[in-house]
Length: 150
Picture 1: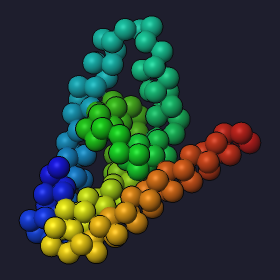
Picture 2: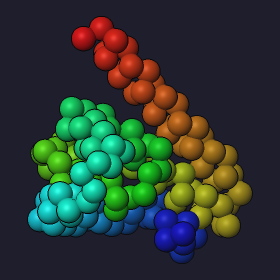
Picture 3: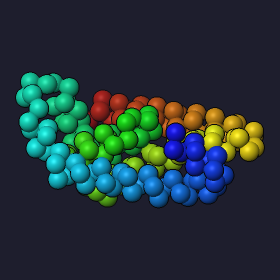
């Protein structure tokens, strides 16, 4: 909602710049919180919870691509940061995947919000939404191929 509001209030171009700074700052904060508090929280969770341990192992093995894919698929923003921070992913890897992964959704929401002023922005928004989905499918296929042959 905030991204749509930024597009409506500032126009899509200014909103993109504002959102890049704001979302990367938010990602840094959630990653840092995960680094300092996440390991103890995950350790306190049920040891038999297969989902958490499978997810943790997956992120450990596939840091960049897992964060990138989750960003492209619009997974809950802060949760991705918390999990990444609590894992062994370096901040550089996390920040790069976050920056690249948020761009399609960021452009989509900024232009969708800006469509109140200019209806052509709806079309631009749809293009970025489709681009995000295509990129996530491409990464998933590439990962499946790499896993199959390693």
